[in-house]
Image 1: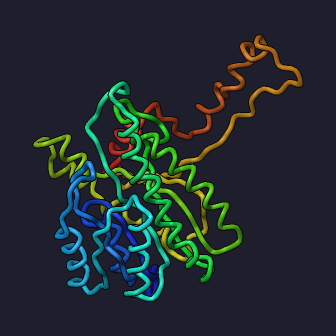
Image 2: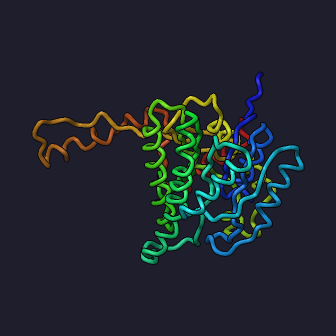
Image 3: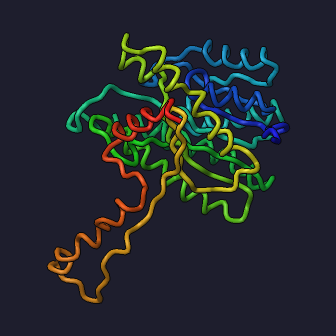
Length: 310
């Protein structure tokens, strides 16, 4: 079996000091990529800063025989994005891969406690942070007719979840960004895809506290997500504009489709009422063998339950 390599490729991974981002950066570097390990070292809310985590992650990659440089810019501004891409170009001469992994989090709270400011906090990092970084790299991708972008969505953005409205709305926007950019790339060899990962990282550990068992750490580890992200970064990956989940070793593709529906040249309110089951695809969706989740928590629990049953 031919080993998939990234020799000669340069990757930027945001939020790469810990958890999922570090797992992505380490796997890419172990396969030959030169990596910019971006992380300002803030808390879960995105506040504060500490250069040590990103530097330690970069040093660990170098100690393992890879090439990596730490970057401490906080995504969410045009200047930060330009600084990150400039560092990649100055250090390694090119940019080929972007993994938009950086994020911020807040404790669960009801919708009535959400504010204009709290929505802005999430959009500036999850959405605009990704847009700014891609825009800074896009001219390089277009000029070299090559680029790989992996954006980070969430099951919450697709299926919803009580108490996470700012996060879910921002992640829903990332899906739209991914789909539109895939079309923007046109015939260029620029692939843009989305990962909705599930892993036990700082947000989960903080929420669960002392209830985190070694079995949960093993079955819900970030390293189990890294292979699909690396594949989406590889030159041989054929898809663009697609969305995937990866939780506890189970990797799935999320599809957006429509039912056959009901057609009429002059539909009435009563027509819609009388054909609503047909519009909703009653019976057809259940028979498709696809999974239709009620919310993000249900999806996560079911995929986690499959770990160790293969």
